[in-house]
Length: 359
Image 1 (cartoon, rainbow, N blue to C red):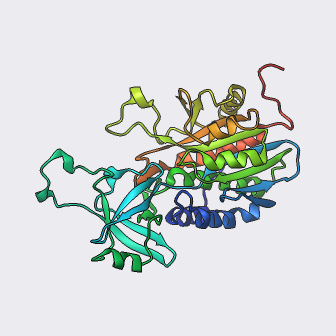
Image 2: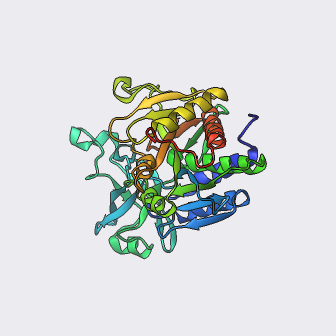
Image 3: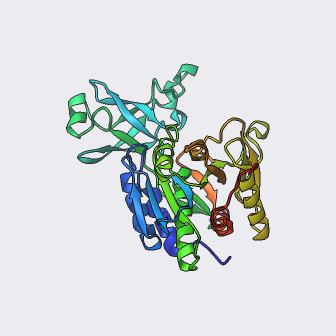
């Protein structure tokens, strides 16, 4: 396949990543995503919590899903001291260790309020107890007391996100705050674009799903899986690039950026469907890597697989460095290979295909 990511699609990726879409508050990101894929789908469905599906060939009895999740980790305002300092609770798997000295945006009904994670100077820290923890990290929004904070529109329950912008390193490394997993939303949007531009006629209804609330337990996927009731679900998410310092490959496996998508073996992954994806990769000379999980993939694959009496499901993962930080990093070549593999896999699925072992 020719070059997949265009200048226009890369601009969309930048806009999509720079927008904040914290868990439970994904609507602005979903609007950006819908606006981009609107020319490539026939209609949309939106559920009560904000998961979105763009549909190609609606109304067919056989239904296939390609899916990513739209939400990012963030923080909830939990307690405001009388001196005007703000303590937080996690919204998803937010990393307290990286918080000190970071800039954040607090999202209020009055608009964005900027703040910083304060932290004592190095000259003043002498004990192990002074390492970051959820008990001692705090926000400072430049106020002298609680009343000033509240006057800005900040209250318990407001959500805060890190303030970091998309960038490209060495021409082929994408860096962003929320590549987990809005890069997945980008990839499935590009699949929709390629299907439309190449006039691919699929023999089934295709649901291009961008689900909410994955970071707090796969909740959005659970809901929309019950609504769509698909026959097949192909999920894409990120996985760890274990080729960086301080990572134990014995514990975390051996997968590396630049060597292609990662295909997962595990109970939620339907083996016949996985074999078909591997065959598709080999036929199209798409590089791939392998990973194994124990009980669960930890992705929306689990939610789809165990819904509706069991849905044929598989997972295509993108190797990512520095997960749940503000400098998550992926290789452009891997992004294109993931898009290519999802696209070719869809073309390989036959009308009413039965993936069962025993018939």
